[in-house]
Length: 473
Image 1 (cartoon, rainbow, N blue to C red):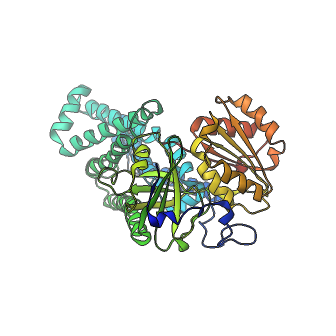
Image 2: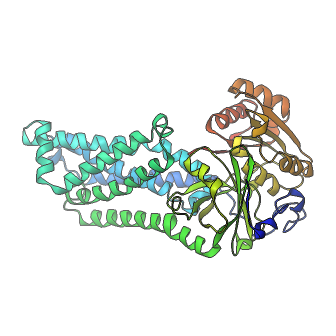
Image 3: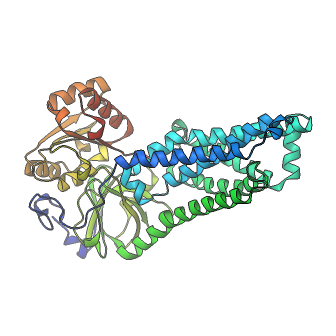
């Protein structure tokens, strides 16, 4: 049942595609502020800077070692332990910065791309830090002419900072295990999120022992100062962009729920109103991280796409009930206050390299598709494929069809069991014969996105024209 107030009753038809002309240019696109255009070419420069930093860290470790120290019992093993520790800690800080939601990085590859890089990089710092602990322990044991386990006890009992570092390593290992996809997908998102907050605690606990006991730092005050600045800058960046900026934006927009409306079985739209939304720099295909300020939900922050371009002072998001949080949103009441982070995402109309586009959407990925369509120019000639296991799961069918018609495009529905990559390729070739000449956008669950992207590559779509957003945590 809908939750509608007299104020919300006025919203009927507000997000109808026939009302999309307000605030539009002649080309059909939003004429107000737009999100900054993604700059994928800057990604290589950012990666080069990060790699140069890693080289500098390793060079620092090598420069502080002397031949006499290497010739001592356990000197070589301790040296390897020092290098792996420096490299591992540096990469851990890089990982934190990647997910700190820095606007510059967001504009390079989008949040989905940053998460892919984060997941690709994540095994390395953990492996290096674990190797650091092993090599340092063995090296110290060789120097003391005793067993490794005896050295572990001595280090923990004699050096309080080592005890803290050991706890930090345990936290990192636990977080690493929880991040394995087979385990992560079986956990509640809230549990996984809280567990990941302990990574900040782990880095803080490890900080003291690095500066006080690290071979590359003892007797090198300049090195200690540089690393202290790096650590402080990383912490400050996280505080500014993960906490400070969202608070400022939430206070500025002052969002609240005005309507909750079912769209399909298990799918709910939520309309919110706010202030200054006419100044919001937003592009179709982007999303926000939403925090609904009720007693049970205020501490949960989840990403959801807008399912239509904003109609100031209103915005509409649409969610599918696939977990505790998304299921609970159907019970929201008008007047509920909302805090937001964002907008995020680089998979927008500005990312395309060719005049014509193709869009494949699976499941609730139709929300980003519907919003992107509204933001495409009228000559985009889109071919849209909506993928679902049953016809009643296709949300916003009429709205999508109208937006496609207005842009002289074609709409297809692919209903049935999930296709494998080879079948997907055959179906796309049949539905979109000129796919190799279009930009291909894909929104949906991981399996669908991976299959469509691979099929697109096989059919000749270059990587620069492949744009994907995975709807999964």
